Length: 309
Image 1: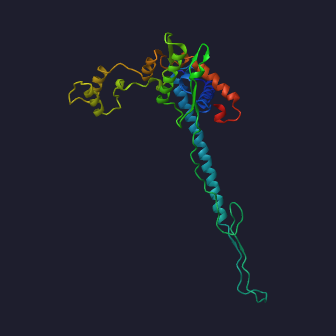
Image 2: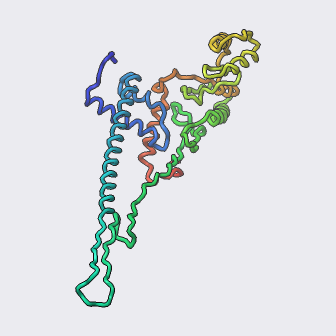
Image 3: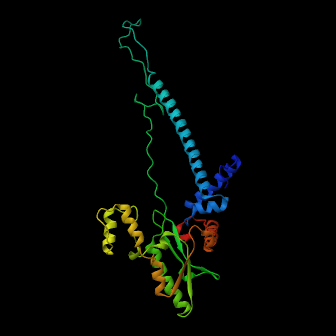
């Protein structure tokens, strides 16, 4: 995008609708959606920076609408309170004279008019108003996660694994590695020992869990952790070294990255091919997930998780 380029108001409204649709799809379908920003970049054909700027502007517009709504509610509440105070001040009493013209022996009757209530007349002079109560936090519904392989022949049915997500709607690396181990064993048993097997993976975090030997300290690590990592590998350093100097030593002596998924696949002579980062368009299974989600939307008539599964 050229520097300093501004979208027209009509183009912004259209992009806002697209962003709202994609964001709603993230939490809307029963199967969760990843790579929202990457999808918006491809759909709108703009840079990632422009997507972030549009989302920020959309957030500001939403916040402005919320503030205006709150001001309107505050104004209406103030008017209601003023009406209540006015009703409370309206108490009608008729004074009685000490000497009545009539000669009856009965004492004079007291005539009172009770105060009005904001809801309905009652026998009490107090005004009972409903007190707004905070709504209890709503729990997120559990969702379904699907792990599967796809080839030129379609889905590999024995590898399909459907399970309920946690409240964070994420799949952890432990579950993925367990699925990968059983899937590699199934593929090797089906195809045979001499055939070549390759599995293509994208760069989701759970696919790239490092082994214990290849994990190195980060900038967020404390100085003591960095020193212990160097000492365990018998790397000499001076005590006066600051954290930045220790991290330089770590970078010079860091081991080669080794992933847990590669180690599991190696047991069954399965090759792992990794896609470049932020290139979900190169993964053909993304289109398959899109069709699967659309099929679920069309066939989901009971809105029950067991039926969807």
